Image (tube, rainbow, N blue to C red; front, side, top):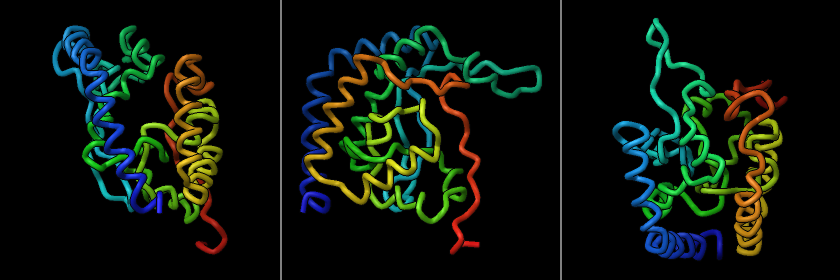
Amino acid sequence: MYRNCFKRIFDFALSIIAILLLSPLLIILILTGMIKMRGNPFFTQERPGKNGKIFKLIKFKSMNNKRDAEGNLLPDEVRLTSYGKFIRNTSLDELPELINIFKGDMAIVGPRPLLVKYLTRYNKTQARRHEVRPGLTGLAQVNGRNAISWEEKFCYDVEYVDNLSFLMDFKIICKTALKVIKRDGISSETSATMEEFMGQAKENNEL
């Protein structure tokens, strides 16, 4: 019952409350972002949602658009500004996703929405992460975030799908608050953000 009905009502109500309560902070971040990023403070990108349906994710921009001589974007760690590091370390860059939750593209809790190009790289089990709406936070985020491997992340995502409940969502929200305060798992061990997921060998029944 919670999965099919009450979870969406809960997400909708909580997103409205959060947007209203955080509106002064959102306004400050929008104005600051316009100054620091010299223009549009928002970053939008297509991401797959429930059942792989594509939507536009909204975040605060944390990286500039500097490119090399050939016109290619510079590495993340070069384009990540001091302002960008701050809003990432405090997870403030994620706040505009409340709009995605309000619209129904996302949930408060669920597997994080990843890149569209990853859709063809998942094996059958990993693809099950799309059986539910993607979340602002999730089981993988409270168990390491970018500091754990892709395989570990996907295991947590599928575990969430199989055990989704109000109690699990409540626990994840509480743990997320602690993670944000401690600023745990923001980066991987080898990258400013997270290395690209290149896929892996398919499961035996898919060979």
